[in-house]
Image (cartoon, rainbow, N blue to C red; front, side, top):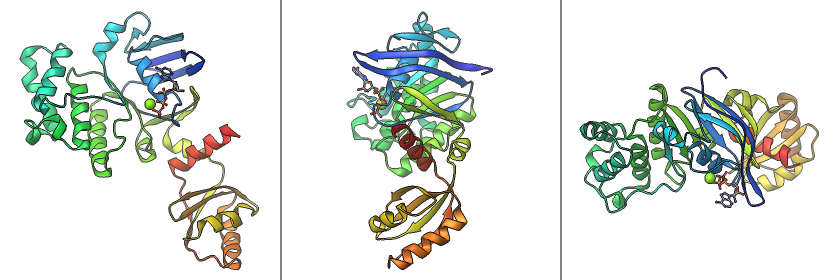
Length: 309
Ligand SMILES: Nc1ncnc2c1ncn2[C@@H]1O[C@H](COP(=O)(O)OP(=O)(O)OP(=O)(O)O)[C@@H](O)[C@H]1O
Ligand SMILES: [Mg+2]
């Protein structure tokens, strides 16, 4: 990739017998907002920790911001902001004190600390809470403060490991508005997430499975990967409905989301009519039968199911 700010070839990391990251080739362009997704234990955290220079590699090569990952750790650290999956703030320190503390760790010039902390407080909408102890912030505010601390040394690259896990939907959206602003300002962001609506907001998404990158593309192209169309039925009796439609011709996959039954079929219009008839015949009550757009979540579940077959 032209203008790649992160480039890995055969990046590998083992833990005893586990190959956590298995010959990963990754190329991330300057200014990308890149999403990293994959099931538990797929290797997302290990990948991010390798790129942050926090773990030694067992194989392969990588450059981050033009520096060699094997030899130039210290130079790389200045260019990146890494927010760990279990990022810990200093609970007894206030919002402002936490920011100042990280400014010192990262050797921010003392004459710049006041201005940077003020800007970050505004950016993260935490100004009115600056005297509050971190322990007394809501979960969403703690994440925003953690992000602000990660930004204090003005890194070019952000490596964020599930920064919004466990946060309420409104705070998640607010956090992502902040990320979008950073992205628009030219920061390169790599973010791992279990939330598919977040993956959908990325410029490209990489799916990691058992340490390997199995697909890496724009959300739109990943959704197009699914061969077929999605039809949706809303029903309280989805267990029975799933059993009935699962046997019908042309139904490739069935997934349920609450009361919504989503079926991947070979031909939307034709199968919608057939499935409607079959459910009616069996006395299943349903509503809202329609051809629905493919969602990111469905594309990934489908890809993973194929890998597991
Ligand atoms: N320090 C370690 N020692 C031993 N095994 C490890 C260590 N760190 C990770 N692993 C193993 O490496 C594999 C990848 O783990 P990793 O934490 O990178 O996955 P992940 O995709 O971040 O998972 P999650 O979604 O649960 O955070 C797992 O099998 C894990 O058990
Ligand atoms: Mg992880």
